[in-house]
Length: 80
Image 1 (cartoon, rainbow, N blue to C red):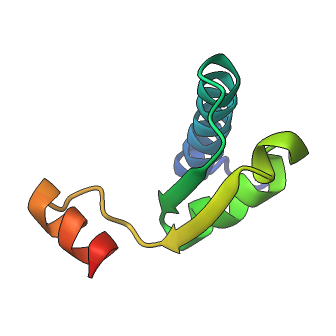
Image 2 (cartoon, rainbow, N blue to C red; image 1 turned 30 degrees about the vertical axis):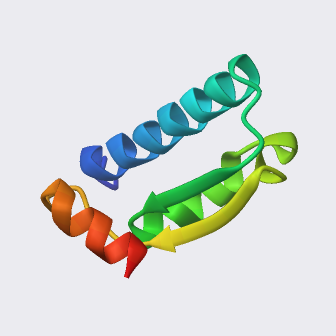
């Protein structure tokens, strides 16, 4: 019997939550361009679950984990 990988399940749940939030915001505010920044594995999961009409609005993807970076460094990495 395999043990449940709770950490992996939480990552999947997080990606689903992000996809749902993106969809709600995109439709509510009529967003036409989205840039997705996420760790590579999360980005791959998002590609699988984001609805086609939202995928059409994605103009760029950045496969980086910037969660623990200060804002000035995130800006530098995304703009530089």
